[in-house]
Length: 133
Picture 1 (cartoon, rainbow, N blue to C red):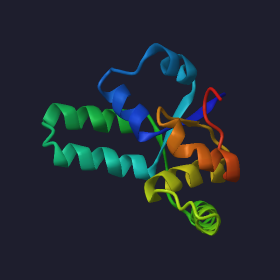
Picture 2: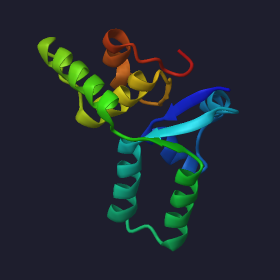
Picture 3: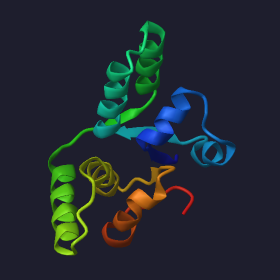
């Protein structure tokens, strides 16, 4: 069985039925995971954009089909290590991207993202694997 973590951008496009064929094919048949960060970002959008009842129910349905990776001791240690190393290299990374990468690295799961550039540093230095790379 294949597993893949969906970044917030991929999750959002799935919700809006706007994910293009190539990334759709790359995640087809896999068990979908999302990080706790993606859950928070999606709910932030729902509140900030005043989503109606139907859109919120679709979000709940989507999240019910995914496995959420929470921040536990293993994820937190990985985030701390990676964040400190990035800062020491003079390239601190955005916090939410770093948490998402830490969830993936700590669990040994690949990440499906359309924002490859945002995660290049994590691929190069932390062992993050991107879907399709």
